[in-house]
Image 1: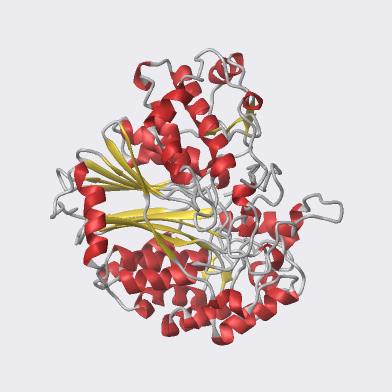
Image 2: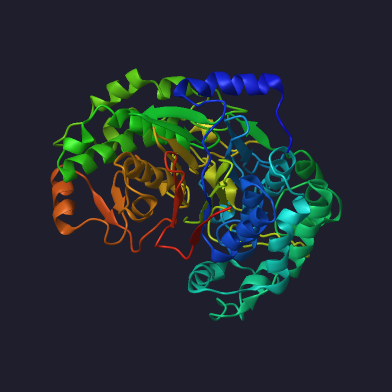
Length: 561
């Protein structure tokens, strides 16, 4: 394992020791993994059993998910790894988010009339940012893991070569995106059968992806971002209307960032920093909620207050947040407790706040699919990772001979001021398209540290990720176990559109009527949504619990050393 410099360690201790972390942390008595697919959980178990740590397991799980969950993530995408290194009690965020190609422009997704052409940022290679996940896996291996990268990637390579059986969920997602797959493109041949979702039980093999993963295992970043694989990627992207260059790939770099840290009551919360909006929005909402005695409110009033906190925090997301390498953001102000008190004063228990009554978003210059997994090892190392290709099956395009399914994360930019993206989110100049920029994300991998309990959680779900994790945090705060966090009914407000979205069956008729009486507009989703993966460690007993969302097909596992 590569250790940090003394200066880096000193900074970490200054930032985190005030909460009461000692030089020697207690250790869990068990390992745990919760991921969105049983085969990915098994891959992580394999490398832990071989002497790896939580970071080795994270590499194995992420790579395996890239093979068996192509509708959610892949090495053609990116994500964020929130990591806690028990060796020095240090938290960090590995930013493996995609970047816009060097030829990207603010108007690249507009038609001749200056209007947004949605298909351009969703389907085909023009929608693809430069992938970050391969570099992220290499970075984890070099700086945190214990085993060789090739050993950590071996389970994923085996899955790509031998194949896996198509599940019902795979078939649903493939059927949904089938119209986007172009005849003659490698993606069409790999992921469909006769232009349709493969029948259940079909064994889906990906030999080209196996070769690409093997090149990454053997050569590290050079195996993906230069040489033969890079040449094939650029040739395939440009053949499909994209604008990548070899220099774009060579210029990609992971960023290791300080995560955001906040407190809700006696809980220390560590979450994703920009270019994820997740930590900012969730912590701002929790700061607002601290001004209410939530447990003493009637259930409908409690839900109303949570919805209003979501509305106010998502409004600030749209106005201020973007890529920290390009945009100055008032993060300290947004997370200030006094600012939260000002916002909380806007909340009326009897009436919803019309979003149109809030200050307008500045436009001048001043998951559905993603995946998440959580890992804990017996040394106390932990990882919360949320990864994505954005929309199901990303851009529905695979450059010939690579097996790399391209992301369509360019849609996460504000392609035009206040124009909703695929998830209905709006934004302004802070999240405009630009060369080398990282699009704003909603991914919210999170650690929770109470006096006696440590939680690890996150979920896919597009713009609803933040609200789902927020609800999970509130369940943790009530003393509930992970099975309650992952199964709690879900509701969501993101400022615009001005409506409360809730999952199918999530709100009973009486609750809907009571919220409507307060002025809320309600929209019931046709299905249940989210796929949360969570772990709880009781530091007093050393015992560990884990849970996978019952809405998905994931698997959680807890086992002794």
